[in-house]
Length: 362
Ligand code: ADP
Image (cartoon, rainbow, N blue to C red; front, side, top):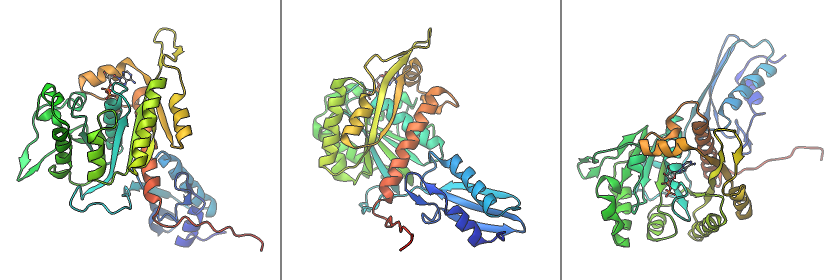
């Protein structure tokens, strides 16, 4: 029978693999602070994101592994924490120094629900405990202040603009400064300049994820963003219609050209559940987003049905992701976790070598 010791605990935990990073949690250096007192043991598992899709499962696995390795062990207490990883490429030190990851939410065309998705991803990640900021870079149609119910104007402290905050998300939008109708007639350089200022002149502080809601298409603002900061990745929102999917592919190619990894595709307005008969109506056909992701070789992060509640919540300024236990909030948080997992995967690439040595008979 195994005596309870740090080595025995570590060896037991080596059986547990992170399904996204494909290595065991000891090799990944997730296991911290092992403490043994008599028959009891406690330790911490530090994940790469608080929005880890397998967080609860991993905790249960860890307890089971230790119990199996040390029959008769007393209490096994596991604390799950996280420390979000940052991208490995050198960040321009003077721009966004405290921001670990920058993510663009893009779409080929307007009206597919890109801003809705950006807002709900941000709120979901913040609810999991991550530090999150959101830039409304859709300067020609800044809808995010409305969707998050934020009014008023950001303050200046010294020479730095202070972001607004709503549902735990720090927020900056051109909508705080100009009438949306005025922004529509801006020339391209003015709009790009505004987005650049949101990166250089705003006091974002320390953030795990800074999300950019881009205008639709592939124009100046997208280019400004990728030229100003090294993005961790982009997420493409599409609806299932062929026209939207064709535009999503164009978006993918743009990011590919400028070496921004595409973290995945999200299909919005995938289907509608009839509130009377409960039948699933695939208004815009179905499965196109998943197929496009497969064709392009990028992850499919999930599908969002059409819900009246999503439209109403956007208009009311209370995003569905802020609700507890509703179908819509569950869907949003599942997609946010899938995206956070992709960020962790990207950040792990190029860090410690993923060497697996197969030991077997020689
Ligand atoms: P985009 O940013 O792509 O232009 P928006 O996020 O502004 O699109 O969404 C356009 C409209 O569609 C909004 O009124 C929004 O509330 C609504 N909408 C977006 N996604 C859904 C959905 N899944 N179900 C119902 N309404 C939605």
